[in-house]
Image 1 (cartoon, rainbow, N blue to C red):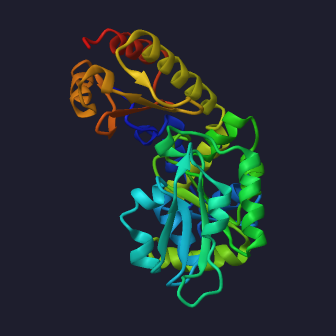
Image 2 (tube, rainbow, N blue to C red; image 1 turned 135 degrees about the vertical axis):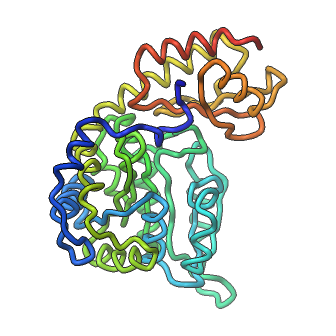
Length: 340
């Protein structure tokens, strides 16, 4: 099977498995796991923050950030298709006691005037705005990339209103590669950032939450509350550290493969590519075929291709490290020769 459901399906490399075997470990709750400590130090420096925290997942990192930045009764400004709003099981409401103020997005960007208008004033009827939330790259928009100029404007607006900014950067390295910049530069326009080790970078598990020292000190306690107190975690931190040190250049190839596949679909199939492919995600509209996404998912699986239904008539394909050039060529052949 050619698995294009997500970049989360990548398997650990032989090098990662060896790093796991060789990892020097200790009890991380006591701060004694040298491999976790090395990962956190390296990650913090990479994104230009004072400190970092190794968490089990992007969702755990995001929720720890919310718990640290906000207090019950606060409101978070976010876009209406953000991962934290759609795919984290209402955790922000359940754990932090906050509500979401969602704004319409265009390719992941909220209108700045609407954002400014959404920041609450000093009225006893209103919740206090506790956080502004950005997602880069933006999953629901097909991996669209928030440009530096936009992130800078949002950060400036937030600072002028004394509101912190968090970046859900699950695929922030994809954004940096697409923009030909560094994650450190992107993270400049945030008070905290979460990024995944287990997506495009290809590690088997884990994410990083980064911010200043006081923020991470408090987030460590929130991680414990969320069940994330880790013990001999070096065995899973080691492949994450290896992925950070070696996996970033591969992302450029993933982007190129996504563009090759998108071009072939657009020109030689009955599908229509909906998004401008800026990273490793392709959204395909099945409406012209008269069939639903679910019906096409079954047809694709019959010819050895796995994808996901993103909406009733939208299929998502995601390229990643484990898709070889031969598999991509095979996928292009199969998709463009399906009976529409």
